[in-house]
Length: 366
Image 1 (cartoon, rainbow, N blue to C red):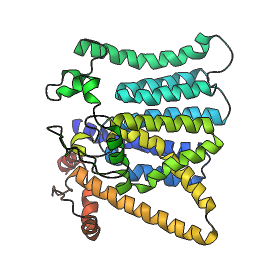
Image 2: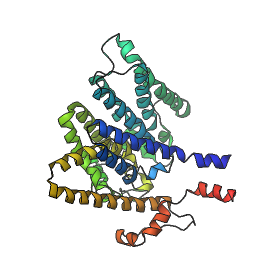
Image 3: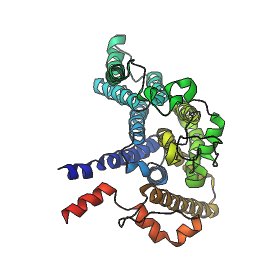
Image 4: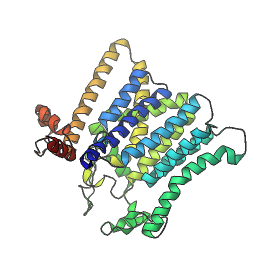
């Protein structure tokens, strides 16, 4: 039974990633994207960001994205339909935002922004007392938050002391003042554009820099920022809040001492904000496509196709290195882009290889 449980556990992040992909497409549609562009944005997020890597590992980043995406989808869907949330809707929205706070304290940026957006759009309804209108939502937020605070109080002596406050190795992580010390502009440049090395990473793991900036792995995702501008023409309030949430979340994380993700050297820490940015790809590309003439539309389609292929290859290489070895246990040693293109069959063997515990179960079932 234990082996079967170990097979079932990887399905949890995989199903979470699938839900995230569907929500990205759903939000894109709510913002006015056609089905085709929404599918492209959803596919790009699912197979062209670190969502793919963490769809095979039980890390919290994909779950953070799920809760914030689902909450944003609920708010946008109700706003588009010009209706208020009922009792169950308020409880569900509150639970999503509350549980997001238990996964990552920086999710307070997204949770607060989405809550204020829901209030701004009048989704609590205009009738009844304040308690009746906001009570169910507030209670649903508080339940998981209170449970987390109680756990931290019992385990670490204070409701506001996290496990890192007792860490024996990363002494800097014991306070916010020593944790958020990086230049956020440098961190943002590294996340989005080029590799920026941290000159003194110390014993923090990795090499002190994100090895997979978006421009070098998923350049089309940067179109999402233009898409937010496009959204502002049609749904200005939603666009302003969504843009603010994304930029604030990314900037705060870019100021973190180990913003590059330790030994992984990837953008996993900003996965929730990349998920919220992804629908903008559909809005941006749809708008750009409508501005092209018939002759240039073909060239534009070819360019988008090439960028999608480039992104897929880059993430196959990333995934191959992440899983480290193939079904035969042979380690993966990454080469240059051209070298890995030549041996793409070998890259695929590693990238789509089974996790170790699944191989162990398969061996026992023989």
